[in-house]
Image (tube, rainbow, N blue to C red):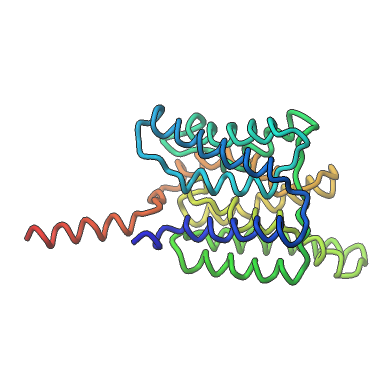
Amino acid sequence: MRLKDARYFQIAVLGSLLCYGFFFLGLDLTSQHILTTLTTTLCSQYIFDRYYLGQKFEYKSGLITGLSLSLLLRSNFFYFSALAAFLAIGSKFIIRVNGKHVFNPANFGIITLALLCEEAWLSPAQWGSTTLLAFYLICCGMLVTTKAARIDLCLVFFASYAGLLFQRALYLGDPLSIPLHQLQSGALLIFSCFMITDPRVTPDARLPRLLFGVAVALLAYYLRFKLYWNNTPLYALYFLSPLVPILDVLFKADRFEWLKESISQKNMKLIKETT
């Protein structure tokens, strides 16, 4: 029953990426940053779960946030890693509308800190095209075969963003190797598979969800080529996330639950046992 929870697959993929980058690719990751981030996210998750909501410790959610922060956030000071982790987990419990948190926790922690101070920044995470393609296919396969149920948003965002990059290259007469290189970013992979597709913060209904993916791609393109920002998909998601509660009101649909099917099956089993 446990393997039906998509978060186990997310933890496995993010953990593999982190270990591969740290031990084999020599990315600018430090053990202090990783330990501080993971410890703070798990401790914050425990405190908010147990003492703020009075529920069981959801360690899987905290671990996914910690792994994403470890991969994407960079700082020369460990206390900024701790602050980003606390902001990420805190936002999930404090900034809510109708019981649904507004921001992806890792996205909120990273972008809020990057906007507030210059001592924290996002890693470009260029891991090479072959490695990137392999992990990307694994991530997409994971999304299809598990309960995350947001592969539509992943594909629409990526296709929209890639289409904008290629049309710009064709319009300017640039070689197509330029947009291909721009798509070969570890940060973009993590964003596409684990951040914008977070089922707890995306629109519940399919149509607004797809429109939301296109809007994030358009804003990311504008920020990248009109304002010359870097890692713009993360900023675009951060700025547009407050629209999701409005879309959920306009387009009614069932809210996603991580173990909805498992809980339903468990209830059916109990019914059969008592009849």
